[in-house]
Image (cartoon, rainbow, N blue to C red):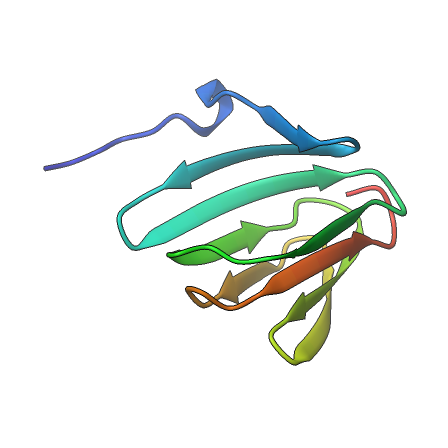
Length: 93
């Protein structure tokens, strides 16, 4: 069955202060657009499905398991299922 989504019509939620996101959660994967205010920290957490994060602007530091990376505008991060991860915005994203 085809499921077609309009990204800009998805409801934007605010799971915590200084965080806005849109996402689609499937049975095995999730794709997320996140917008963070500089300095915002999303604490360590995990999901039962893979997560794909698209950073449309700015710069953010992600910890995924034991590894750390810095994401920049236009990059997509793949986070495996059940792997703890966190994020800190180094710039407005």
